Length: 261
Image (tube, rainbow, N blue to C red; front, side):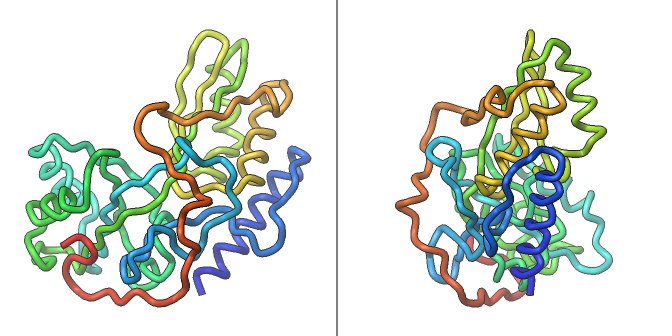
């Protein structure tokens, strides 16, 4: 089952980071990342939510499009089709890990391409975009099915004090701490500070602290010196204590667009 694989991968990653940083791994049974939407039940949280206290403006809802391609599909071409349709509507799509999706959806869909829409965009926007890009009922060549859903993502900004942010960024990239733990991330440099921005699957508290400790070690500072804030202080965040509990169950996927229209 994918759930078991995610648990094992998360435990190994946190243990590996802890060996370098002295961090504390997750309690048994706590995945390193997860969170998703279960469109069949109408809830906004899937089966893999980790233990997270960094919420509020650090957690956001995003509408995502997940494409299950046919075996002969050219993923670059499919992404280009989406980007062109999005540009016509003034929408910029962002890459996002498929792990933001509910595990039942992942097992059914196995997306080869997953993108997120900007914060203010809706499922209706995503539906119109995919209809324009691929045609209704997945009729575009190379597309087996398309899933549209609302998911929860972490939207985080780490700030690491450093006298040489460029060298610190290179060292972190070489060591692979962020690539292993976060996957996609972006860096920015200011006078005396390296910024690391992340938007993706929810991260457990233990994994966040292990990442902070790893970056602090490379910077020669204490983990508490690595600040963690929301990427944006505007808009609406999510109080995870008010979210419905993760539910189990299967999501039935079929050819064509799912969940959006």
